[in-house]
Image (cartoon, rainbow, N blue to C red; front, top):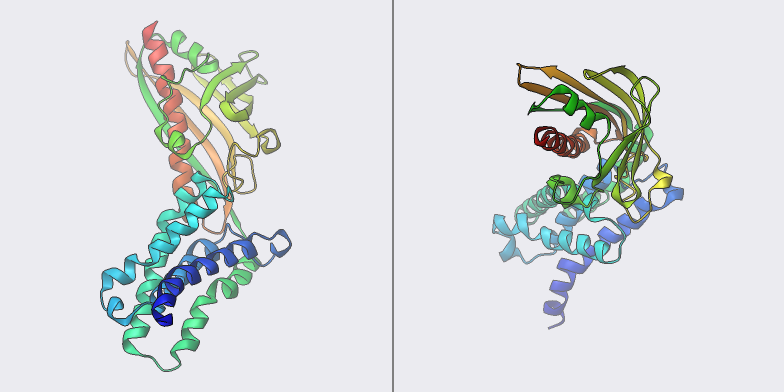
Amino acid sequence: MTTNFLKPFRLIVFPLAFAFICYFIFGIDSFEDLFNIMSISFIFLVPFSIGLLTVYFSDIQLIKKIRYAMLAPWISIMAFFLITLFLSLEGWACWLMILPVFLFAASLGGLIARRYRLRKYRNEKIQVSLFVLLPFLISPIERYIGDHPSIYKAYTYIDIDADKAHIWNNVTRVRGITSTEDKGWLTETLGFPRPLRAELNYNGVGGYRKAIFDKGLIFHEQVTNYSDQKFMRFTIKANPHEIPSTTMDEHVVIGGEYFDVIDGTYELERLNNKTYRLHLYSHFKLTTTFNFYAGLWADWIMKDIQNNILQVIKQRAEDI
């Protein structure tokens, strides 16, 4: 009777307890030289260990089903995410971006545990214990190697049937954007601030442009290269201390430790007598040990922001 009672306890509570132990240890600032949440050790090896624990403590009859070994670990993963969201320990955007990695790694851990249980390896408990401890063993090595800053380019464009003067007027300065004009579906889903307007004190090199988003996000932009109705390049600076802590998760805040936008460029190209192609591209920097994955999300987010602005400019230029 006692054994039957403990089975669901071990299957969910043990892996969940392990997840929170890792979360708090990896999040302690004084341990930053050894552990960090924004690391491969946390986003891949921790869910791997959760999956391993879930399946290792499961009934042998359940383990024989490969589908169980792959999907059962997801219960603890989802419970972990929901609890941290409920307690406001992490933001929705951050978890949504790493959820695919967590689920994949947890399933992989479940499959490894299934193999051990079915084949009954010698020194099985010792080997499984070492697998579970991998996040704590690998993380110091990863922190010693350090983060690798990388620069990426997000390129977008749109074709507009309008006079170039009308187009350019909407490029340099963007009047208030209503919620119905805002088509940034990805940034809206992730809870990122939406664009409100853009101001420019004068057209030319040295001009100060301010792109204002809701929730307190402001891009401070300095024009570094300008050709009227043709080309405008500007540096971009987001000051994270200006952004309220409730606006964005600290791990994805723009201008923060891991993600920053460097510059932006508008370029107007004539296609024919009626149509112009407006190019918009930006450079952004990532500083993590998993830029290969974070770069995909950052590129999607930047392109969503840029396409949203281009759609607004197109609509307004063609409506004149």
